[in-house]
Amino acid sequence: MEQRSTEEDDAAVETRGLTKRYRGGQLAVDALDLSVPRGSVFGFLGPNGSGKTTTIRMLMGLIEPTSGRARLLGEPMPRAARSVLPRVGALIEGPALYPFLTGRDNLLRYDAADPTADPRTRTARVAAALDRVGLAAAAGKRARAYSLGMKQRLGLAAALLQPRELLVLDEPTNGLDPQGMREIRSLVRELAEEGTTVFLSSHLLDEIEQVCTHAAVMAQGRLIAQGTVAELAAGSRGRLAITTPDPVDAVRVLKEHGVTDLVILDERVSGELPVPGPGSSPADAPLELADLNAALVRAGVRVRAFGAERASLEDAFVALTGEGFDVAG
Ligand SMILES: Nc1ncnc2c1ncn2[C@@H]1O[C@H](COP(=O)(O)OP(=O)(O)OP(=O)(O)O)[C@@H](O)[C@H]1O
Ligand SMILES: [Mg+2]
Image 1: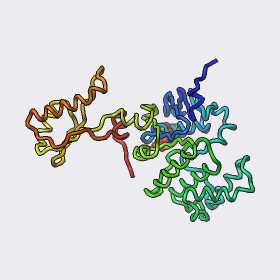
Image 2 (image 1 turned 180 degrees about the horizontal axis):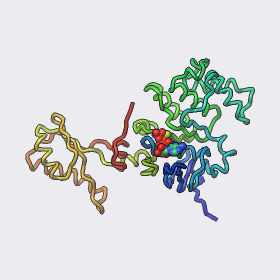
Image 3 (image 1 turned 45 degrees about the vertical axis):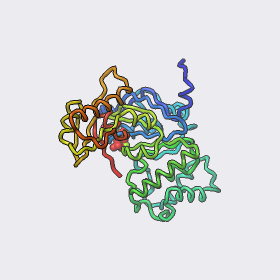
Image 4 (image 1 turned 90 degrees about the vertical axis):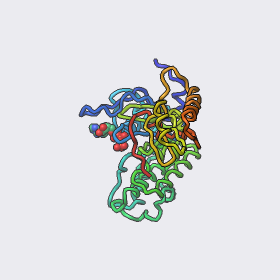
């Protein structure tokens, strides 16, 4: 019998070796070990096709894993689906709506399908959920006349009909305008403050940085990194940026010292710092910067400002995957 650690029990979502190979042979999720701490706002980040939705479908018991296991709120999925899923709110790609019913009537149906929902308070519950997602004014419109963003909001409202311990949101801001994105972000923060763990997928780094405490980065079905957002951003070093009236000389010297991807913009030169070799500790980094600065001065380059730009999650992602990332918004 396998011993379970306390950490596993504490995790809101935990997977071990979770794998999905679709019938066509596509390996969509490859041996995923995910740990989502309770109380976190966890960003599940990855480009299109990296396996986010597939993972979420397995977590929610909508599709069977090929191998591996998943726990939701400490309970095994899909075995414990009946007892766990009522404690979990979910928004998954393209919420199923009745097109001829209004937004409000769609929610009333969702609520009626929940055996634990008290029918006497149904109307109030639905009104509160509509209000929370900014859909009160459009509640009387038929769902088929909803825009993508409005459908997304309605799906979110359905997930919020009951207080939940865990919310699983697949690209919750998909299709929303910038104002709508801001509203959803502040809603997520609000829910987190109330103690709900929020697991949300996104391909927008910016969004993850703004709202998440933790994140996991996926690429081609594999987990590349996970940790706190601060840890992940710190894992990459920012670009070097200097201000100098001698940009051409600066580029020459920096190049000699292993700085790559050099860009001159007027009096500003920026570049990618050399990756520390194996065996070198992060403590070497400040030394390297000081050496670079000294080398510039020795070569007669006048330096007005010198420093490393703040590392962002985007830098981390590029460093981890070697890929660019669509940053919208
Ligand atoms: N039902 C399916 N049958 C076969 N292959 C599938 C199926 N669903 C997804 N895939 C494949 O699995 C891989 C992962 O897809 P998935 O939808 O999980 O990615 P995603 O990270 O959610 O992408 P996006 O950001 O575009 O939503 C892709 O290569 C996709 O083509
Ligand atoms: Mg998806």
